[in-house]
Length: 227
Image (tube, rainbow, N blue to C red; front, side, top):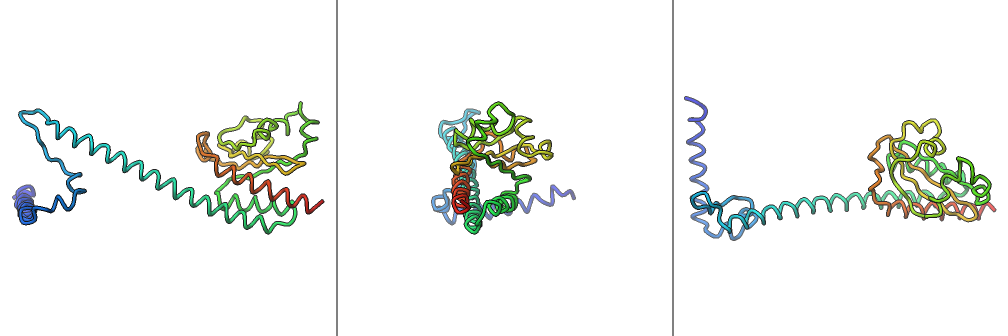
């Protein structure tokens, strides 16, 4: 006897159990509309799909689309919550820094550990240096970016990568670039990743703006204390 013949009576018995249950509980689908939304109830006649069936199909598709959107929103919310906790942890660590070198070391360690960065570099210079080297391939490459006061993500030109990351430049696939303002000095904080999509150009920079504010304020505080 084949498996097909062996399985058929069991399937038939199970279907009869389901049918008997629904007959005995006529309000089941009314009490569980989510079940009704997932099953197909054909209304076709002579191969023609009824308007009701078409509407149900459209509503089911819309329902799945809304579910997918909800899943995406929940994922984004969880990611934002994790970023907020990381920023809080970093802020507490920076509060403990008393001098400029401690700020740099804290950023290097925390950003690598908390944000899974492959490279973290910071360039800090005075306004006078920007004016002096405005024709050089150095600080002046970032003058317009610093003045914009807006972080950015994506891939950088080779000369900027070389200036920021030195011997690691060839390994950097994407960068989160953050402007820093601690008058009378300015600078850039560069967080690099080997993954080209880690800091892709379409990534939101809201979190990076907050990071810019925190780091700039910390640098301003230690600079004032040092002076």
